[in-house]
Image 1: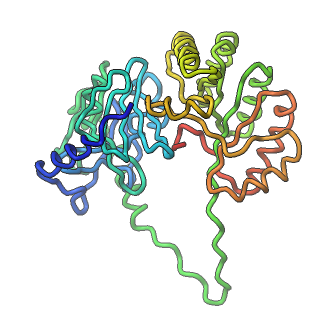
Image 2: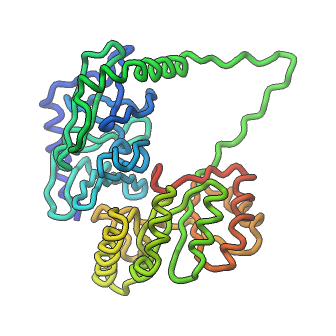
Length: 372
């Protein structure tokens, strides 16, 4: 369960007692490095200060989206549940949950709470780098002796370069990233031609996430083939039994950029939790990862979300027939979470459906790449 709301007042009191550091000094540039990997430099994802604490975007701790190769990552993953207003950061053994509504931070496994809540900047959750590093046995450096700006380097245990060696060997790369950043900040579009009529603004692309329910329909591999050919990613939900039977497919999906979650169907919460324990152990055994998300009965979703899990909640179910009609109907939604069944009929129709979605300018995203 979530900690008491009283902790919110404690966190606010602590913030008032700390010396406030400006979020970002004028012209100050912050670089972020994961082990030996320099992350992209953008103004809206730089580290920032709040009430004397250094914060970084939550996805910095997600090996799937930080851009680092698996062996160069931190061994952690992160997810943001918009509906539950929580950020979960986890590895194979531990999980840390930030509740944005309650301004709390806690370990759902033992109920221990911490006084460093997450904050939001430009609609993106930021987490306290020191708290997360301490929880997951990571370290970080705050280096100010660069000509280009300030460097925040987060490290796991491993044979990484020292900070001094990294800075000396990365000068050209830092300069290139800084040049690209400066150009992006000073770019000005050409003025419109007065003789030409003004262009009509196109509507913003609708985010669309694909979930695939795998429960023995035999066509999960065929759907993966279609998605790979279309260069889009999906979140595949397996029952624990099917995950054990199709372990090669699960490894293939993870290696090609898809996500793997668990499909729970217990009649009671206890039964579903037993399935989660069993399926989680299978996934850890075959791929050394935790489930990315859960597809569980509606009445159990709140309990699993309170435990820090991201739960899939579809807004539409795909049908094998009438792909054009389906794609058109989805345009009325602000965000689409589309569930496909692993049936042979759906696998045969998936290519046409994806083409229709792309023709209507849907932005098909990996569910765990942004937020659910």
